[in-house]
Amino acid sequence: MRRLYLQVYLMVVAILVVFTLLVAIAWNVIGPSRDEGQRFFQGVANVLARALPPPDAPPAEAQVALEQLGRDLDSSITLRAADGRLIANAGDELPAPEADDLASGRMHQAHKQMFAIRLPDGRTLVAYHPHERFGWVIAIAALAAAIALGAYPVTRRITRRLERLRGQVEALGSGDLAARVEVRGHDEIADLARSFNRAAERIEKLVAAQRSALASASHELRSPLARIRVAIELLGEEEGADLRARVARDIAELDDLIGELLLTSRLDALEPGQGPERLEPIDLLGLAAEEAARTGASADGEAVTVVGDRTLLRRLVRNLLENARRHGKGSPVELSVAKIGPGSARISVADRGPGVPESERERIFAPFYRPAGASDSKDGSFGLGLALVRQIARHHRGAARCRPRDGGGTIFEVDLGGVT
Image (tube, rainbow, N blue to C red; front, side, top):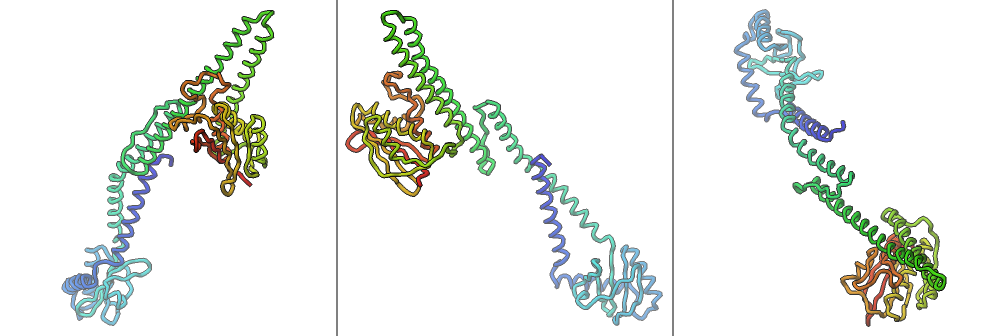
């Protein structure tokens, strides 16, 4: 059965029917209190004693009266003397009752429930009605019908909310990023609707950021291409060598930008928490010292071995050092490596530059973000370096952050997992 509301509906009906059956069984087994039952059966015994011939009447007379009573009640009835001897019988002969059966008024034989009554004169009468339980069946059927009518709108209301949620999920999957679900109530379905709305909002923001990144990339690529076009048009005999050198620099600039774009796209394609494919043990301090020597920075710390992608970690360290050199205003750049706990290490790159305002310490990790007043690519930066640092750190079970340095300047800290 594929329709959820039918499953819920039938489950509710089935549970209530079973409950009703259990109540009926309990009522049959327990019944009224012992005193009430005894008073009831004593009254019935008095009525039957007056309707039947006296004990000293001929058996034929008792037989006629018993058959008449059996027809009136549509039941099998057996009348016995105080000593258990059969006096008369109408229908199937029923067994003699035990003392406990006479006390309770009911007896069970071969899964059949019979009524046993001791008359005031000592005789016992046992009766069995073969269609006794049909009334319960009819009552249960009527109750099931009533429950079905009452449970349907409740279950339908619950599943209709799920259907609305499904419709909005399909709308989101079809490209409607503004699709949201109206939140009603405070139950699990309402929580699910809120979760969907949060996820849809996050997706909308991510797509918007992606589009903004593509627009920014187009803008960044347009400037060097325009310069190349103008340089080629101005290319002449006398200044050919100089212009060719400028064109070569612009082409190299484009190559760097395209390389960073491709790396960003590759990291974006990885699932959250998924690490790089090329993993190997890496001497983190040795790798950092190599990159520090290339840029003239100092490097110290403790030897740490981390399992990761060598190319990505080298790019991470290089971007941190290039960023510090570019924005440190000529101040010394200091790099350090330290083990900060079981399985974790930290790379710190510090400078004595003007620092980063608190409002921009998180924004500088966004792709293509530049502080106010920075010109397009004048310093060889495209605004992707720190974004790549954070991406690489996250794919190595780490994080990147920016904080102020005591005494002035900036410290960039990157925590990495996978330390052995």
